[in-house]
Length: 152
Ligand code: CDP
Image 1 (cartoon, rainbow, N blue to C red):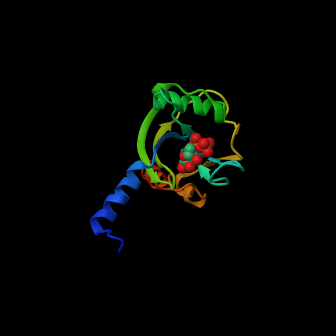
Image 2: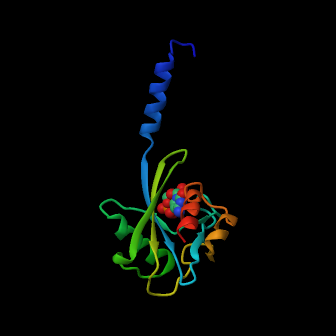
Image 3: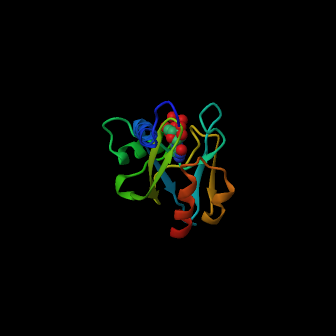
């Protein structure tokens, strides 16, 4: 320690640091097809976490409800139309990245209109739940795999 710092002051500083990390709300979807396979999408080159396989979705913009944001993101990223009553929240991911705290509800979605197309990703894969762990994922997404395996 030293420099007049006590255990208490160090603890107080780390609380301040943790509390001042911005929280970012991202919504994500597990699209599930008739065979029970789940869609994951490869993050494109040039973005953070490039090459990792994520559940598609994105940031909730100010004033949006999470479901509206997810519907917008699924249209932008995959070209599909999803109706709000087909989306059910399933589990929240929570991960402390270096510069922000990510909160990310995962919604289950079994019905959509249109053909799923990679508009912003480097690839798409429909994967059996038991095989999801073969795909490297962002740390926030990884814990969601076990939840999905238990559910499906
Ligand atoms: O802004 P960018 O397109 O990179 O990302 P986003 O999809 O809007 O999500 C913001 C951040 O949340 C990403 O940079 C990732 O760090 C994180 N994220 C994640 O960990 N897992 C996801 N399925 C989606 C986003």
